[in-house]
Amino acid sequence: MRDRTARIAALADAAIGLLAEEGARGLTHRAVDARAAMPAGTTSAYLRTRQALIEAVVDRLADLDGEPAPPAPADDLDGLAAGIAAMLDHQLSEGRTRTLARYACLLEATYRPELRTILAHGAASRAAARQMLAAAGAADAARRGDYLVAYLDGLVFDRLIGAGALTAPPPGTAQSKADLTEAVRLALSAAMR
Image (cartoon, rainbow, N blue to C red; front, top):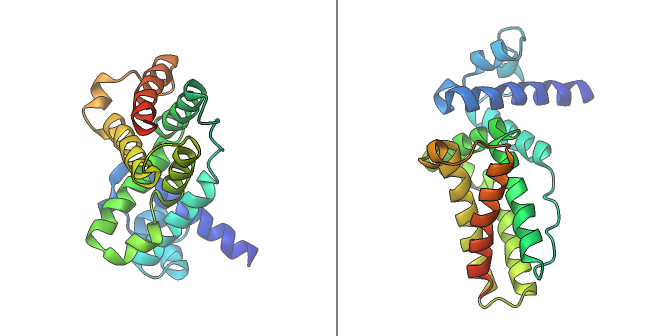
């Protein structure tokens, strides 16, 4: 069982790399075999269908990402903004491959609705944002928490593959973290009113 679990993790890691480099069109069983340096047919033996392969990728992304760190207290706006900005910068730098793979899976779910429930993208982040805003006494914390997460997702998307990728400071730099902190602070200020 442990060998099977390790093999599926290795295949999912290879698939994550393929999704980040080539998008969903590059994700084939044969390409995963080659990327994982495994014999032809290995991916098909463990993950028979494309959906099974994508589910393995999503499960692996969840394992790799783990639980988000608890945010700073809502009354420490600067600390909270800096903490969230550091998470976002990580998604754009060290976590770039996983972030690109996650977006590729989300786009795939647009055309394959059965994947939407598997992905459940942002559910934990939305719950944490709602709770944080409620604790801070924000009006309509549930709706504003959802808006805040949508804004942060858009910020990452823009800096990863949108126009912001050309104009924002390079990810992983002090300038990137400072710029993201300012953007997050503005969003938090608006959400906590």
